[in-house]
Amino acid sequence: MAKAKKCKLGKMYLFIEKESWLDEANIPTYAVEYGIDISDHIEDRPNEVTLTGIIYSDNKHTIAEKIKGLKKYKNNGTRLTYVGRRTGTNFLIRKFSYDSEVSIANGHSFSLSLQEVRIAKKYKKPKKKTAKGKSNGGRKQTNNSKSKKYHTTRSGDTYWVLARKYGTTWQQLQKWNKYPPKRIPIGVKLKVR
Image (cartoon, rainbow, N blue to C red; front, top):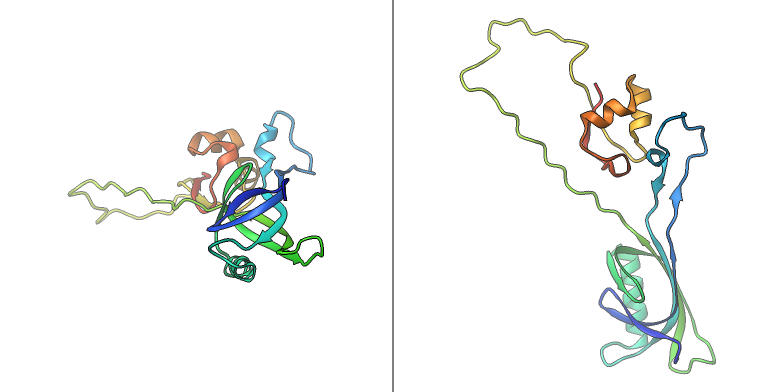
């Protein structure tokens, strides 16, 4: 018990003996063109945390209430903040297990896996400015193949991938769009032509 540190997960206090953080990235296994910025192809993965410790009752909650509360967090997909040696937000419980041990008289040992969830910022479309009094009435409407074209981003989209898809260069896409290569949000429209 002397080794365990009191930490907070959501609204609950737990005694944590070990806190393991995993910070990894997806690195491309395919060939990257010479001269292309390699960082454009690296995808940062969400953080994962594994906690092991002991569940004790306290003045507010019994052991059974704490176990029930952790299961409820997991089953409801409750986004949690963890405050321990390190602090993290937007975590979901991925795995939760607990054991009754003879060496722990008034509690249970447990293991808990947390995974960070990334929340996309809501994209606001810019309002179109129209000139008052002007209309297209009487003018021939043409479908110009060289007109502007946009792509709504999905997971895994990079400037390099989109450049190959739409027949342009990744440098041109980066000039047309305001997002840095490592921070292209999901669900936004990028100019591709």
